[in-house]
Length: 48
Length: 244
Image 1 (cartoon, rainbow over the protein chains, first blue to last red):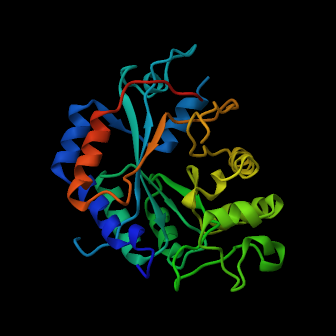
Image 2: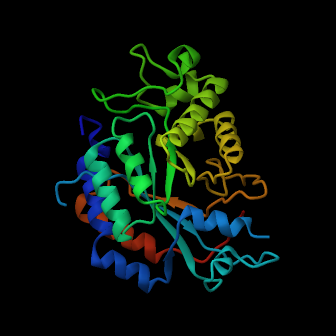
């Protein structure tokens, strides 16, 4: 982006590539990690 | 997709093993009680078309599970169009009180004469959250973040949660209290850990969803170690507790 280089495009691009990488997806699975949404958690928290 | 800019990603970690009367959050969602629940979250949507495109792509593919948008930014209408086309998308409001790019700036949603302590001499937000902490009057902060929530609704975006751009709303206890109050008023969870920055436990109200950890890569991390940071973070997640 315009400046603010540490938080610029290269930083963002690296994050994008990591979350789309097979190694990252495999790590989630291997470590028994479930991806959830905020709306899931709110619904669960509001259950009586 | 190599040319796309990307939002910043944080790992928002929940791991519930505490037994509530009616089960843990994980159990209520139909999972084993000791699974690790994680929100993969991108923020800064609205700042650029490229940020939006990369974030929408990742949401559509399930590479991330949630994201948050900045109402005062130039590309927010594109986020609104995406939200309309994807009503199941988990899109929260990235409440904004700072404008960090030197020649690419934004300001308040509320009328500038109603929030003068939030704006610099150019009429835009300051570039540093420390300035917010020092100069912003709490009443004006509340006015502005309520205006941003109202604008989101007017754009047709149903905010699923709230968080704070550059953590400006975490800089003082007074601002954090406003953040929590306004989110509760809108019946949406606000992103916050169970402990405050000083390590003291927060006092959640019924219905709050406080998380165990919020993690993101340090921008000083060498590029070649970027992926390893995330792989280590995932491997290091432990079943813990969740307050709500």
